Image 1: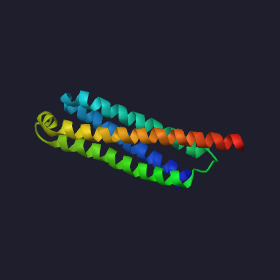
Image 2 (image 1 turned 45 degrees about the horizontal axis):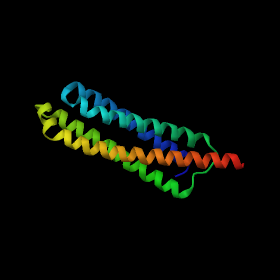
Image 3 (image 1 turned 45 degrees about the vertical axis):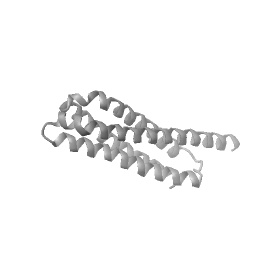
Image 4 (image 1 turned 30 degrees about the horizontal axis):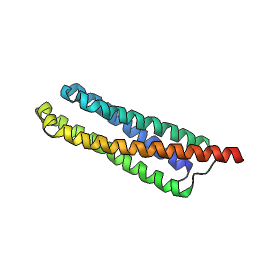
Length: 145
């Protein structure tokens, strides 16, 4: 995964996050009881989107190569994050389309979303650490050039 691929992967995931954020907003309007549960998911999505946008910008604008071991990690994290974000969307769609969505949400959706939010938090942490690591690498490379 070269810097262009990293940029493309990040921006693709940003697009998915934007789409899921819209689905989340629609869901909250339909199932008002879910608002407090989904506030934290919304914040995690926003945080993830911000890190991805910064990472995409930094990898696009830097001439410094990304170390190969980090390229593999980035590729894996992009795939895992994409799967987690899509799982959130599937869960929202599943609970929104059933009759008595509020009861269904309270019965099983809340617990499922808590699990998915936890997964998203872990991915966010990984992205933040990776981005910090890359900033250090890019800074060191530009200082020695």
